[in-house]
Length: 219
Image 1 (cartoon, rainbow, N blue to C red):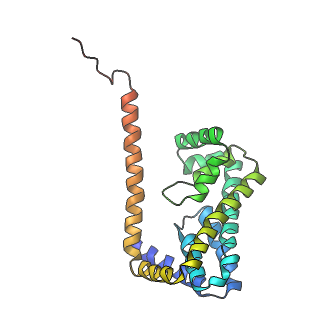
Image 2 (image 1 turned 135 degrees about the vertical axis):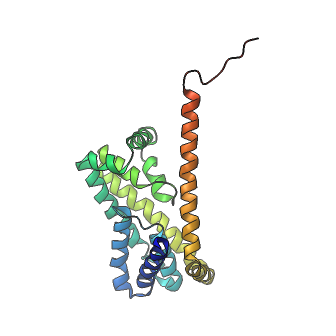
Image 3 (image 1 turned 90 degrees about the vertical axis):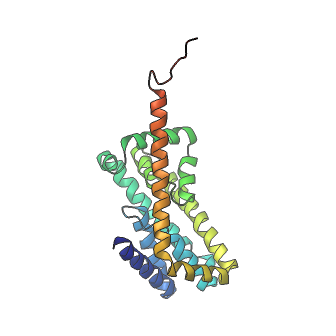
């Protein structure tokens, strides 16, 4: 079963990084962060590992969240460069209409169009904003700085919570490990429901905007 394999894989990654000496955990966290933000998707693994690591090693709260942030920035820069060099890759991965919508958000909101997706967890899409930044030739220095700061805020937020609520966090993490399959099913279900509702809303709006959709009543 695919979800069972995914569950075991995620747990193994998490246990390895949480339990290994910090000198190995830090570069491992950079690698995991880079993979997650580039071509692969490891949903919420960075957040989970950061929380678990600091809950079990509270003295690392000052520096450990910096490493998933660095990794995420590296992964985003890789995706940015791929998108910048060849738009065909982006078109195959992301629907052109969605890219157009994201580019419109960039023109309307500027840097906030990148900051907000970088801060928020799924189902908020993020990689399409990274790819769109590459397609639009968004200044690479500003792009890297925004990603780094936003991701640092996100991971330090989780790290500080884990520091102040160590015992509760450890109990919650233990519960999550014993129910991770159910959590994955619910998470996937919520994401699918989000996209289904979004698709239905778009269809209804298109239907309402078609000529003749509104029927006039004669007295």
